[in-house]
Amino acid sequence: MSLPKEHTAETKRLLKKVSKDKIAKWLLEEGYYPEQYIVPPSFKVNKFDLKANPYFAIDNSIAAQPKFEPEKDELLNISFPKTELTDRTFGIIAPKIYHDIVWYLINDWDNILKSLFRTNNKIHSYSFPIPITSKSEGELGNLRAGRMIYEYLEMAENDLVAEAYNYKYILKSDIKNFYPSIYTHSIAWAIHTKETIRKKGNRNKFNDYVGLVLDKLFQYSNDGCTNGIAIGPAISDLIAEVILSAVDAECSKVITAKGIDFIGVRFKDDYRFLCHSKEDAKLIIKTLQKQMALFNLTLNESKSQAIELPEGLFREWTAEYQTFSLRYRKKISYKRFENSFRGTLKVDKKFEGTGVVDRFLSELYTKNQELKFNFKDKDLLKAISLLLMLKERRNKSFPQILGIIEQIIEQNKGKAKIISKISSLIENLLNEKLKNFDDNQYDLLWLIYFVKSQDLFTVTFPKKVNSELIKSLKSNRPEFFKPIPTDIKLFDTIKKPTKNILLLKHLAIFKNEIEE
Image 1 (cartoon, helix red, strand yellow):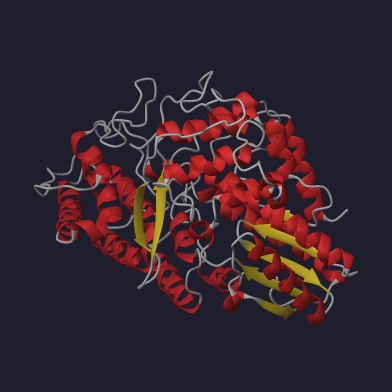
Image 2 (cartoon, one colour; image 1 turned 120 degrees about the vertical axis):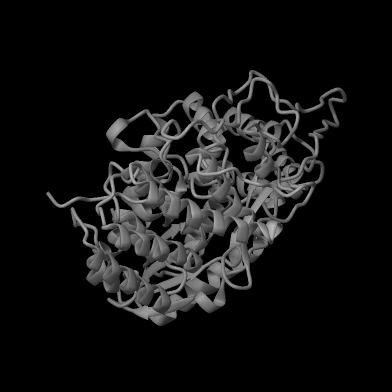
């Protein structure tokens, strides 16, 4: 049995040990908001229980014609620049609809499991979104994809390396614009097959086909749109796995029928195949394209390539970054910090869109969120300036940068001059972002939270604030999806300095390993 196959079998085994109640609780509480780096710690679920009945039940008043019409709502979106020309947009689902998606999933959990783990599927997923572990069988952690992505990518990479000796090529590909392209009707197709759902009389059998219910709920979470599901919520990741599991299983069937020997792995919409020849790689990619099209999905042709082994097995940036890595350093001098910073810039420029900036930042502190440096005042101010500039290279790194500055403030709380300088830097940055309020929602969310949690200065808000998330930080109470049911708590008030969760603890993106 190949290592990827063993991984799938172990994932299935561990998941079956977890009760449906625990899965529901995790999806509702830990999985409601997008990943940790998207929204500040105030946006935290403190109470969200699975009710005995859904908010939106199937109407069976006419037995032969069941109806399902949940209340239509809109996603609460938050974006940050992905590139100079494109944004990455995450979505928060209205709590009633989110609850019901979980309710119907859990109510038909055995069928969902069958859809996730299909017989004879030879493309093995490393992106199961619910945190299970052999260290605590039957229990779930609170880890989200923001950290899981790095650990599971490394796991998939290592497993492929161990199996690669028996193959000649590695094929890489991914899905173009995946989450925004998901056709909600394909949810039912994936669970029950397209043929079944399209059979005359089946399209409205909500009692018989949970996929139809989920299709409608995802539609109505997004103002009735059938194209695209929210990026960020754990239930979106789970549904994405259901859809791609159907694609993977059919691809496996077709490729195997042609007598091709391969090992396939997938992390979300990112594919890797080990195969024996370029001809095999071409057939695999064509098969994948054909099956994707059946689900209204498209492969990213510009990123599809077959590479002769051993090239292509590793993420190239990781090797080049090792020269500059601070991973095993207990203490860091300013000179070493600056050298690593400059090296990070070089690697980031050469390999755009990688996690090298995140990696560098994570290596500035220990697993206990303690800084590895204590620079002299002048060097400290230079370091802060460099860190803030680094944010412009990778927007998602901004929360981690603020987390490091938070620890710098704690480290230097007796130095009024340093604290005043930091406060001034943050205030200037905030005022600059406020000039273009609507385009800087992501930065402003984190800056406002940071200023208020540290009590640095009073934020002067514009007269009109359109963002419901920023309104919430301003008033220190939830200003979104009103009225939120009274038994659902989706906001944690910002407290006095030192009373809030550490930003670095909230983020917890990488494992930090300290040299013994």
